[in-house]
Amino acid sequence: MSLLIGALALGPSQGLAQQPSASFERSAAPDNGAPGGGAVSPQAWPGAAAPGESSAAAAPMPARPDRRSELPHDLSVWGMFMSADRVVKAVMIGLVIASVLTWTVCLAKTVEVACARGRARQTFRIIASAESLSVAADRLDSRGGPAAFMVRSAGEEVRRSLPAVDYAGDSGLKERVVSRLLRIEAQAGRRLTRGTGLLATIAAISPFVGLFGTVWGIMNSFIGISQSQTTNLAVVAPGIAEALLATAFGLVAAIPAVVIYNVFARAITGYRQVLADAAAGVERLVGLDLDFRRMPGEHRSPASVLAAE
Image (cartoon, rainbow, N blue to C red):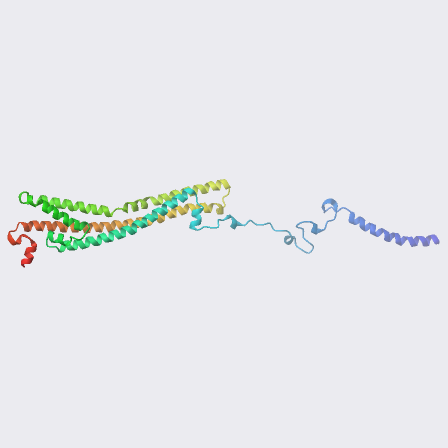
């Protein structure tokens, strides 16, 4: 009996003592799902989801590259000019200088042509209203300009040729007067066309100069594409924009030059027409004086005829 009672007393205690050891053995047993064979907490793995959380929320998102950092910050005209190639810069500077010259010639020739046409028209009115060449010369004594010089040159030729008129006739005198007037007219027109040749040159070559800058800039852009081994538009767009800016500069220089040249060509043609009218008036006065010179007595000059009336 005593042995049975002792065994019953020891039995529950041994069972209680075996439970912690079994629990320990289970915790120490290798886990096939965890590396190293040990049980690892889910928080020990980076990117692992905590209990109750989804894996998409727990996994860190990869950092996206900022595309704006690849684009140039200044795409203005000045910014593109400063970042352009040296050859393209030289082309743009040359076209800017050409544009400045165009507008300088425009302002200077506008004043010159306006003054010359106004003076020629006033002189032509005086010549048309004069009774003789000597009267026209007296009225234009204090005036300048090609038309007034025509009157004085014709009077000088008449005075020099009068001794030979009675013997050789007046045909040679008229030819010499016409020759002088034509030379004066041509010289005045040539003087007024100074500067317009520059406008024609700028209008003709500026688009091609700008196109040269564009071709050079696009060549550099393609070289940059081959070196960077990318066809991203953000990489090649600035170089292409700088190249096209050279063409824009060429058009800005050429278009006003063409328009201004055509305006001045028409204005100078009108001015030469006024000079031609003045020359024709001088020829009529010379012919009138020669005709009245053949008349006897008091009718020798048209001024004396008007005074008698």
